[in-house]
Length: 217
Ligand SMILES: [Ca+2]
Image (cartoon, rainbow, N blue to C red; front, side, top):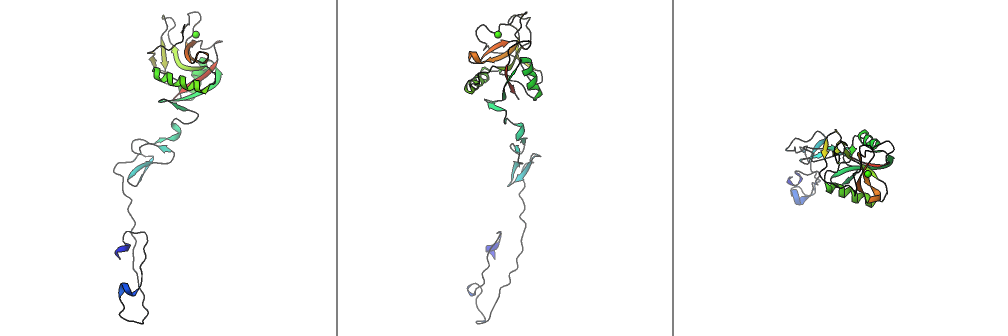
């Protein structure tokens, strides 16, 4: 019965046309012997990630995981999902609470993130655009900080989660900014709403401006 081979089901007809009729008028029956073969699951050519399974020769990440199934299968929760949001290539959390610069700094660290770094002007402009669209009217602390107020013009850096610092390579401060002095230091950095989200240097604590903050992870 070739027409049954390799199939999940098939029909075997019992009629004279198929088998002929050597004894007309006699009831006949057909005995069918069959055996089923378990189809072997084809193996994946490459070793799948430990959070992946081999399905139809392809490594597929388990549910709740995302990736190519071979090198990566990351937990979806670890990715940029709510309350974080993707802006350009970065993953940010935009918070509106009213806090000081130092508090904002600590709050991001507590979340396993850091105050947002905008190492390139492109990143800063994309965020500025995002904030303008949100129309919250809130100023937001970001991860720029003056680490040496004794130096003329300061030494502005982007501070990362692990404490590493990247020197600011472009200048996007508003007119007259940064304007901290030795006696009245303004070592923290704001996306200043009232000035179309230009960068402003502000006090980090001790009666400084309160605002929201942007964390990055
Ligand atoms: Ca200022």
